[in-house]
Length: 318
Image (cartoon, rainbow, N blue to C red):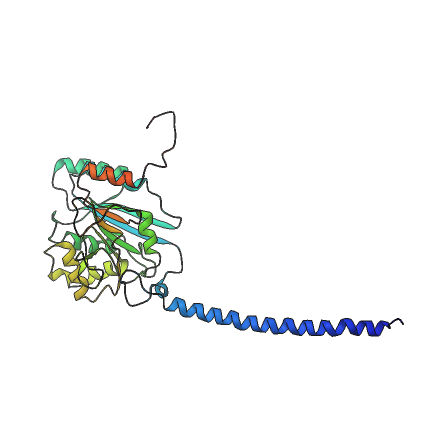
């Protein structure tokens, strides 16, 4: 006996009704699970441990929202070091940085004192425009570092505190090799205010709040340079090992609440072996104490810096 069309319809509607209910229940359960995962994710992010002994504020909470980073690296050197400057121009001029990143490398020294300097340095400025001449007498541990940092706000005519000319400013020695991409990558998650970054001294320490950052190369956020310009604290204490004295200013002024110890990605050249160094390795931001060409060549070879040399009929390099 044939069933009626109406009974056939009921047979289809009833299973469909229960199927729709089941879908709604599953969706409700999945929504609860998704919300739970979101809550768990927020909890996990808010409790991410801080890297390398940085400040008590979780770095993720202070991360910049944009990818733009502006860095000034001031290499403290002497007016007569022409060949060293030309060599370092090759070292930094052939490095690439990611899009949206600006890294300016400047050579920093005090007033010129010789006639040949006035001509040769002027030619360098005309050709490269990468020199800062400070109004001071040349020195190592009698205030040159203070003059460098405190002069920057006036040199670059800061007018907008919300958008300074640089997010970070760095002091580096001319025997330090800085790998710019590695430096930028390490700075991306870090705060852009009240930051003090470098290789913490003493060598065995991993705590950036113990003493100070090594003079091989340390970096601060722009607001600290502005503070140095306006504060009376550094003016009372200018003489002494420049990196230690800088740390004294930061401590006395209660600055640098955000600190980042870049050890062991920053280190001294491995020879002679000391407790302040280790072998060259890929996870490197800076290598210090490259006092001669042999050490520079060994370092540059290790990082394979000429790998992007384009083939050409103009030269043959085996």
